[in-house]
Image 1 (cartoon, helix red, strand yellow):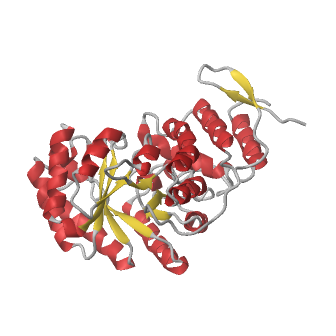
Image 2 (cartoon, helix red, strand yellow):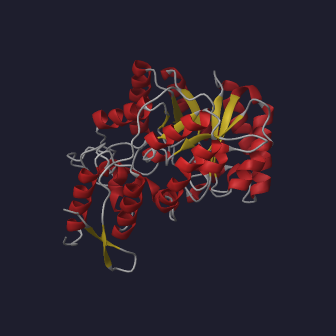
Length: 385
């Protein structure tokens, strides 16, 4: 018997949707050879913890680490303690530090690739010297675990910096201090409004010049840059201006297939939040690209862009809710609860469309389980089937 689900649309109307019966056939495979690919992974909340949205995060460590093993099993690297893990949106520095320690140890145990976010979120506000000290504390912890460091954008630095010279001073100091090459992360204000004017200017051309000046002064200490501005042409232009040997990791969740595929002048590697729900499919696409089959790569990955743009629609910073929602439907966790209560950040029509798009792509290992869980969510909102 054909099963249908009544899904609400943005106009408040219900329509019948017929879920697919079989998932996309995907399997693990050989390590990637043409691109370095990180998935920025989410954390799994402990649903039984008696906490409030402003309490320190209660994390289900077993489920959180199991999800990272899932990503590693498909050949993906894990970008740990990034904004996808709700850094600064439910996960404080103490929680992030524990996450980094546990994930780095797990990566060593299974031979997984890992890089971890270094920021200043133990500091609400402070002087330039205090911002630098906060960065130093986090850099020391990450390097102490043996993981690669990702220097994240800092709200505290954005608040205190007087101009480009302060960014040059702080980042220059950190790069001189780093024991191994790091990844620099430029996160746009669409992901975090507090980062407006980063690198000392709201003019993106001027900000880009400062960013490149930081890199040019220490090219041996910069493995690559992660760009999250949701502007494909700007990323391409920046990529072409990088010193030789410095990689570009796309963070553009709107335009990633074309940026990873590249052109005659180069390509981007990847460090993406959307590769949390797309992990196995993204890995399959990159292995196709490893063979030189750009067309086959695009045929696999291009259809996922509609889902990604849906999850990352404004307010973009709430994309994490959709990521965790899909992880629940896919069976990677037993519940749809998030640290900080962020499961409430998106609407029922948003969830319905995310389910429909993900199911259409074959992302759910067991479509029947996903359909049952979707029905359970709909019933909580009063939608009878």
